[in-house]
Image (cartoon, rainbow, N blue to C red; front, side):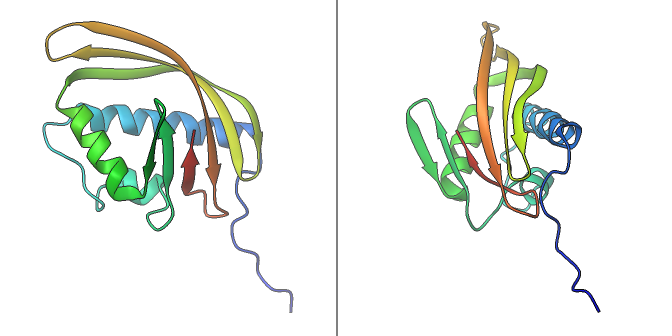
Length: 133
């Protein structure tokens, strides 16, 4: 009897594209909450490797889920609205993808900001994010 394989990451560019778009949508939704998110929230359970997660952003390293949650929840307090658009997979393989995106953000003081950016993601075979750069 052949051994059944575990999930092996992304099988197509379209699958990686859908994952990336859904992740950015979930992050934007969580940024507009009135409360902090925790390790038990759907965003965390669905997308992030809770035991092994690192994000490098703005020249700083958020090592571990607790550091990322502190960063994310601190950002929530400054925002009124955030949306992501133009999410395009630039390259992909089964356990990684690179994406370009556009964030449009309104802060609590009604100042607005648009960010066109690029990020790289590494995921495990279970499609849980371990690294964001």
